Image (tube, rainbow, N blue to C red):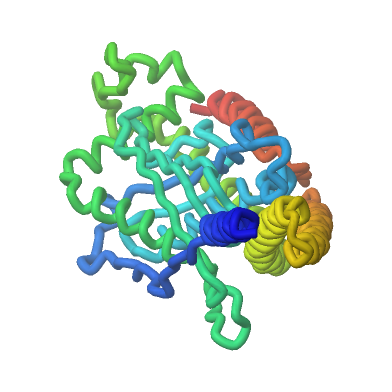
Length: 393
């Protein structure tokens, strides 16, 4: 009798230890939002650098196929939405010229910000950010991560800001700090290289020898054109038209962001709640199943006892254990329901992503999601305009 009691006691102790080990740890999040730093001293126009934020890489290549917290549809939309939010934040620092979301590096400007989405599930946002300039010089690459808690989606306490605004602020602050360390000569050099690159694209025969590429891939100024060069003056007029088109493209991105904002924030909140629920359900399912199996084992051992009371205790333990296992399996079925809900939320967000039509002065352009292709068509048109107008130089 003492022997089966000892075995049963050991099994229940083991069960308790397993339950403790299975309990999830509390996640610590902060409600403090990193403030956005501002450029305090005024910057003269000739020292302003234009900055282009590129569409982010969705980061889907390393996602497990059974990871239901990641939707390719949502990631594709985020690759346009997140950089536009970042661009708006960077503009607010007051340290830059025009800050725009552009289709790609085919748009010539002074500074480029590229990004990759590492994680984005409503609870955690992680981005890899790389900054380069018009001379092909690499400024830096940094990783940014922020995790929010329930407060971010509490409608009673929720402020009118993005739940991850603090992350955007940190990126913008790092850019501001780097910009403030640059010399006036370096700023002027980047502006000049950007102009010469644009000119070379339209008139390589006139400007190909004005900039050269070093063995390391960086661009250097070989010589400067005369300020009153008629070809350069015409190129500058063409570039002003390009600026106007880029502004029109920005209106498209802003409209897309406005349409996406409400369903996306709802998706974020629901995704956050689903992740929390899934984590709790997994914990409960694991705890109940482990406890149930341990109880069954203890019951089987006890039922083998020669003692009548031991056999009775074993039967009770087996029955209780079976109920716990059944409860754990039921929790797993409930978990699957939540995972299906996440998939439905992702599909509902996809319905918000539609083509946009923008009106230009002389034509209508339809953006079907491939803004890079549309911009390439625009550059082709600009070259045609330049060649037609050049006959009068």
